[in-house]
Image (cartoon, rainbow, N blue to C red; front, side, top):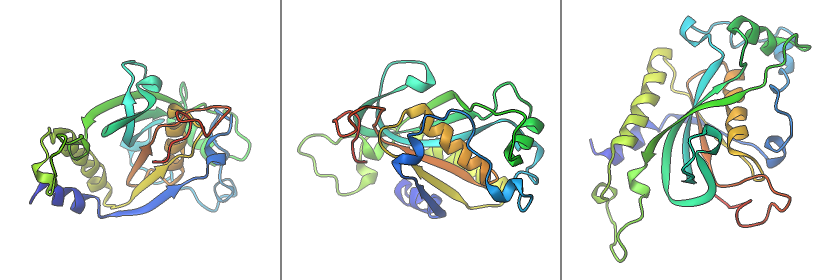
Length: 228
């Protein structure tokens, strides 16, 4: 099987796309989003059946981004607000309730009025490298077959391996894709993504497409709002 075909076959089970309006992701709230009504009324608790290994306050969001590298080591500043000509793959770890235990996070996740109000934080970012098929080609060279594009395919294969590893044990093929709005910050976007994944019962794999944008008074400026 070719790499290109392998990529298609591994992502053919993407069944949900969550594209939220900018108004949802530009709020100033940093605490955990409100509990869904059906949860605090006792009609549903998607977290009740989580296996022990998933009963933790942090979770992973898989990233595809065309933000340029910044040279910073801080996870929140690892990528700049500039556009890169290549796409990169990464894994973000978000702690939904720093300083709290799983049982405390679980109670907060199904309560209408919380005893604790967690503040999610992006705590780790592992950049896997560029997606080889997005690396700019040699000027004047026409690429007819992605298999012939020069570049290291290891980042893509590792990305797929990690995604498959999360899908197999759960017996699910659900992959959720989140696309943030404009006038937002990188860290906050993925803290929101992690909360959505959490309230979906941490089922399957949650991915985020992180395109270059930042908070700005003028959302139409070149660095503040760029279409994906």
